[in-house]
Structures are given as structure tokens and as C-alpha cells.
Amino acid sequence: MIRLRQSFKSLAASLGLLLMVSVLVAACQAAAAPLETPVAKAPAATSKLIVSADIVQGSQNLTKDLQASNSCVLSSRFPKNSEMVWRARVYDPNTGNLMTQAQLSKVEIKLANGKAINMAFGPHPKNPPGEAYWTGSWVVPKDSPTGTLNYTIVATSTDGRTGEFKPIAVAASLPTITDQTLPDVAQGTSG
Image (cartoon, rainbow, N blue to C red):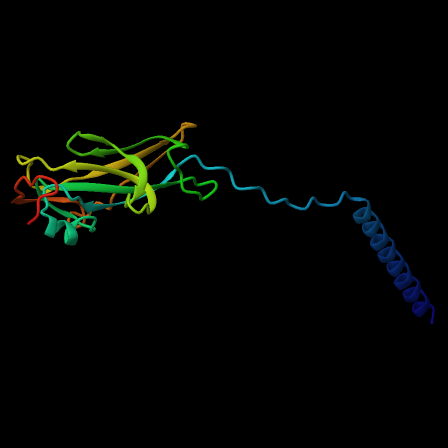
């Protein structure tokens, strides 16, 4: 019986000690400063403009009949003496809005042959006015070498930001100058 009392006292002491430790731990946790809730940060503004572009056949040196079917049609094959027309849109990455000549100081096509072509902003078609975007054109010289012609379009905003468009560098999809040479056709000439 004495042993039972000693065991009971020992158990009571252990429980008391455990209770005190629990109270102490709870008190320390309550007194600790609450953890700060992480605040979502706004994404950092990006400076790279977004440029999208394509190339179409221009109307220069096409007869009236061919203008109706070939002009402003997506193309990657261009005979010598034909007109290549680049069309581009430039977007502000921070707003997603289309940028016009008021926000852009320059949009330029840089051909791999060293030629630079300034692009102009305006509605297409002009009559009746349609969508507005950037365009630039180049008539392929009659003595131009055949083969692919790589290019880059670079846009610069009035606040100094830039962006560029580079076509996917797969030879079959790059603009290609063909062996064919279009004859000179005066604008307005019927076929």
C-alpha cells in the first residue's frame, strides 16, 4: 500500500509537471508576435513591347486582275520586282492596349540584307477605313539574289521602351525570293 501511495504521488507529480509545462508553452505561444500574412505583390511592370506581324503580297507590278486575287494575301514567296508588305501591331505589355503613332516614336523593319524600312501607322483599307496598324513595303530588286530573306521588326515607344518581332527561323516559312521576275506594270493598268 505504501508503494501504491508513492506511485500515486509520483504520478501526480509527473502530471502536475506536465500541466505546468503545457501552461508555460501556451503562454509563450500567446505572447509571441503573430506571423505576418504574406501580401501578394503586384507584378513588376515589363518594359518589352509586344510586336506581332505578318507579310502580304503588295499590289505593285501586279495587273488589275492579279491585284484582285493576290494583293494583301499572306505570302512567303515573292518574285523579283514584286512588293513585299509587312503588317504589324504593337501592344503595351502593361495595359494590353494597341499602341498608335502617339505612343510609338518608330517602328522599323530591318532586313538581313542591311536595308531598313520605316513603317507607317494608318487604316487599311483606306476607303472605307478599316483597322489601323503599322505597314512598310519593299519592292524586291530585279537583281536580288534568290533564297530566304530574314528580317526583324523593332518598335520603340516615346518613353524609350522597345520590342521586336523575329519570324520563326525555319527556311520554308521565311520570306523567299524566287527566280521569277515580274514585269513592270504601271499602277492602274488593266490585265
